[in-house]
Amino acid sequence: MSKNMLFRCNTSNLEVFGTIAVWLLVLCPRPAASAENLLVNGGFETHNFIGWMRSGDVEIYDVNTNVCCVPYEGDYLLGFNGGNDPPIGMIRQEFATIPGIGYNLDFAFAKGGTGTGTAALQVLIEGATVLMDETVSDSSGAWPGPWDEYHFSFVADSRRTTLSFTDVSEGTVSFDALIDNISVVVPEPATVSWFVVPMVAASITMRRRSASSFARNP
Image (cartoon, helix red, strand yellow):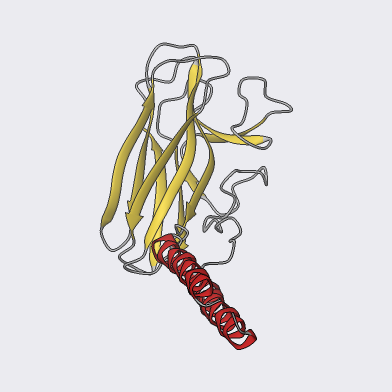
């Protein structure tokens, strides 16, 4: 094989891989940091209600001073209607959204206490219309209670959206409805592996063809 033929084969490979590299840089998303929580104080780690409006009996529990409950994360959590009060507690927060964009709501919920009955929270998301109306519940009971993770999705229909949690438990004697680690985020975009895989396969085919040309042209 002549030096000119060898140069043409190597140049062809460089052109193919150069093209692939450019497309990968353009189309493949860079590693993203964790999505930003659109809610303020979603884990109640400020030890106050900054960011939240509230009504009824709701209380922030400190793991260092309140032995009843272990937070899902951090040092604080929110309890509804402690002291056997009637289930009337509510918290809500308004946040900015873009109409037509999808969002994920995540939080941890538990029944704290050994009393009989069902701890339950109504989860309401409202924009121009009611976007979601769900109820989460737990009748097991433990001290401290195990946490359950909840995940919901919704599509905004206005520039301001309100999330609220309202205690709708069946009684509250010797147990509380607990919530922690609330977040609303925009889902991260999917990768473009559907495009990358064919491009890589094409490069392998090109290399094999170049090698075959090399063998046929001594």
